[in-house]
Length: 187
Image 1 (tube, rainbow, N blue to C red):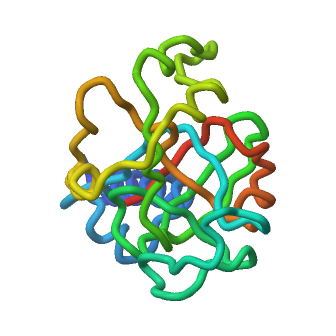
Image 2: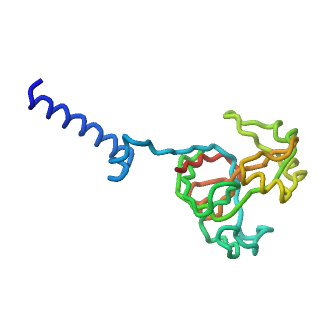
Image 3: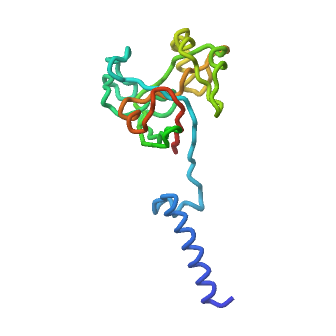
């Protein structure tokens, strides 16, 4: 191969890699390290509900991560084990709308019996506990909360009713109806 052909080949490969970097929104630092180690992006599809809305029975309590009172104007999410202050992208599966949010609280810790959770599954396989099961549920004990931080499931016979709670600004941003599946993405 002549020198000019090899230069064109290298330029072509660089152009293709640059196009991929632009398409995936990589920064200059990411472009330099793209060959060394790929970005570790994690994905989770979970059932989400809301909290900190006006009239919430937990209103007036302090956020775990922010260490201040609950306010219905504060954007953020509650997650059982994601690091406080970490940023997640939330996408509503029904509307397709998404937004970024910070983890500002721990939870949700509402447990329901497995029998109730198996009775209703939607087309995608998500478990939906009925309102009767929510009424018969219970709040997790201190030990179960510590286990949840370590990623362990609750004791046999029980499952968490939902996996993430969102404040009203986040729910409005993605058009969430109060209890439906969302996709979480983080690095």
